Image (cartoon, rainbow, N blue to C red; front, top):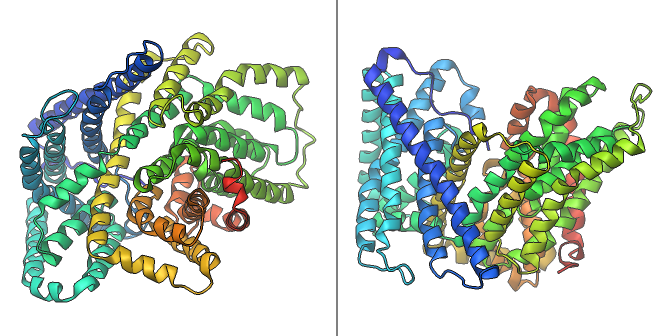
Length: 622
């Protein structure tokens, strides 16, 4: 999903110096707090592992403290993501309009985000106050210490939204926006009696029409989800708005989600310490002399690095700069490069510890260890399908000017890369063997990466650490906040009875399990093209997984079909927003890569068909 900024360039006409200085000071404060919380989260979980396995005295309070820190980290990270314009959004449609229309849509996006804050903040404060009498069992402190993170984060988002609006737009533009929003609210409340008579058809209005318009207008998806949930609860039910605040808190309460910021940090450490560069260097020496060799290197590097960072954007950003210059020297067309990069991103969606795998485990109760084991071979099958197409496309490549690395160089680069190559296997083994949980293993990986970077690769720039921690918080906040908002939408769909209707329809389709799987593929390719994998999983996995189980489909097999289908949708043009992220990373015009990408999408569909038709690929090693 694109994360292009929602803000326009500040116009000094509307930006008093005092506001600018205030914003800088506030940003610095939030960055410091967020970076500190990232470090605290790592330390708390790592100490918990050491206490259990080294000191044999597990800390009963570590999970509670980690949960409190995580909610505050998520909200402060969401604040930073908002201030930076890094919340996931569909920018392609808005960016294709005229500059005047873009400015209007950007103001609409700001107004929508601010409106969410105005509606949610009072209920979030009330929710935190309601939690005050509840005491945690281990630490024996009020749960309000944790719940207070939500209103504080919303307040900060509101402040930054107001600052961005006042420094960018004229008073006239702001007044027009306020009047328009007020008119929409008035129309909504006047139409409430009519909306209530629609029954479940109002779901179409709020979660199809309204969400579709909001997403296409460039409003950040998390805020579109939150606004749709608020609108549905306020106008389509008799429930109080406080239930939305509760669902947001619930969406950030899964302990498994603690792994999100830690794996994001681990991916950044891979680049900082030179581990990613060592991996790519070895693979380039090994395969660089064969026809299409660097394309195979790109596929293999994405396979290895995807098992660590968990973020497709981070994966592509780590691999592309290391390979694209040399591939261009060898005559590769920029469009071919970005097409292969996008296809490799879709291929590696199931590789552990993918954040999508962790999310599925958190919302469906499927074993994380089983998902980690089952995800390796499906990605390999798709990689083989892509490699077959690479071989066909580059079978006549001229390699006369390419020097083949000597065996001594290959062996030397392999030995140099071994510590980096070992990390994915260490992570997987620790989870599968039950040594650590899926959350704790990330701290082991972080500690390993730091030690390897300092003592083996001797590449650890302390000056970049502060910025790395802040970037971790911002990216994690954007991810977790959209999960929280999607949780609120999922609650609306569930309490309306839609989940029961959906399960009934899908299970009653003729053809049994094969037809159900085919419908799943089509559905999640479409969903993947308009939603990031994580919110789509949060919204729909609790609905469809029970239906799949009732038809005798193994839950791990079904998870692989769902994830790969979403991966295809995420990177397939013209709506696959992951493709545009790949183009941005490769600095390639999107039109250059669309034609070659269709071939790679075809290869991925062949791999997906094999994974779907042969369950053993997903469950054979469980």
